Amino acid sequence: MLSYLLQGTLLVAPVFVTLYVVVALITTFDDKANDLVEVLINTRIPGLGIIMVLAFLTFIGYLSSLFIIKPFFGFIEKLIMNTPGVKIIYSGLKDLITAFASDKKKFDKPVLVNLNHNPHVQRMGFVTQKTMEEFGLQNKVAVYIPHSYNFSGNMIIVDEKEITPLNVSSTDALKFMVSGGVSDID
Image 1 (tube, rainbow, N blue to C red):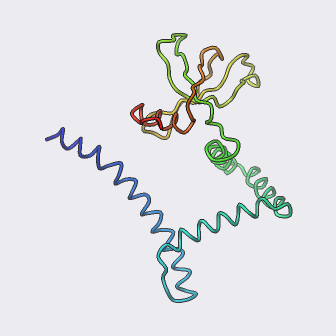
Image 2: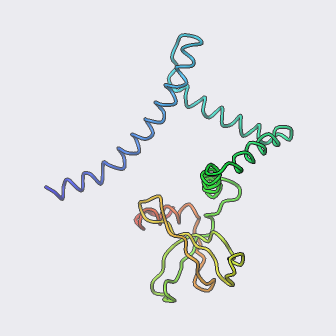
Image 3: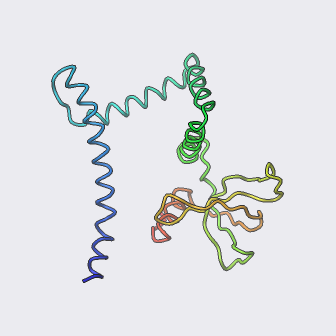
């Protein structure tokens, strides 16, 4: 019975949690958007919240690309970066989002890392810094190794000769690592 309980939990939990988070986000956005719309035109429109969020983010992205508006965004960022405490949170989040989603992706070089100079024991990770010379470390690289089934990982510094580049997309490599090696590579 315990085995069946665990097996059922493993099958249902990922689907349930994913659906719960998606529904909660959509419901929250729709409720807030429809509260505003109801005040203006006394009606509710399902799905309006998501449409408004996507439109708002697209508009902000467009504005940030305009030459005239760019200094304003630069001023806001400078203000945030000069605020103690807030700077740490903002810069960390910005770097993380940039690492995954911008033109300057950081998780784009999947590698194998030899542990303890042993080519028989290796971990998969991503080179995040090609050089560590600014720390006084010669011929070293920074490698981020995500944990399986978790939003965490370890950053290690290794000799360049201890890594082997992988011929796989960074998306497939991350999916494989985070799943603990059970995901198929597309």
